[in-house]
Image 1 (cartoon, one colour):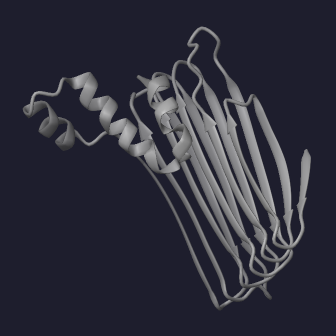
Image 2 (cartoon, rainbow, N blue to C red; image 1 turned 135 degrees about the horizontal axis):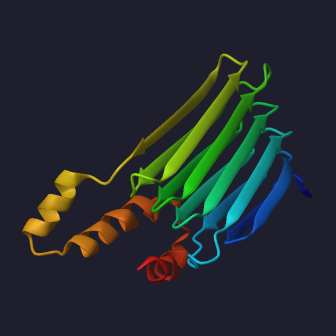
Length: 209
């Protein structure tokens, strides 16, 4: 596992795009900043991918900020697991986790998200969200968010949902002359936009067309 130690007021930002494996542990001291994007968009259906990503973050100083964004757009027999572990050991910090999966064909996705707030970590704001979109009846998604909150003066939320494309939206778009495949692509793109770094939006759009 790769270790990254951020001292006070330091920043760390990285995009992992189609990495076969990510295994990273980050320690943050006071007022440090972390922003991570984990993007899995394999295209070669003849070579199924089995990918595991593991991001672990520990706040050891007050005022830390952590943002973790994850996206997996999978086809064929692809399998991707994303694990996140965020531990607020001290107070006055914040974390945001937003993880999305889009699964087609017989792809399988798995998300394990652990959020822990220690007893002395007061005034923490922490949010964990997992949203999943199934494009095929044969696709599978497993999600397991875990919250361990031992402090009482915190703002902490988590949520997970798995669904299919909005048929009403598809019907609306087709009634206005947009073909089924194009309408489907537009809805999938809209679902993924908020987990993409701005500089990669156009690149990712061209990859999934």
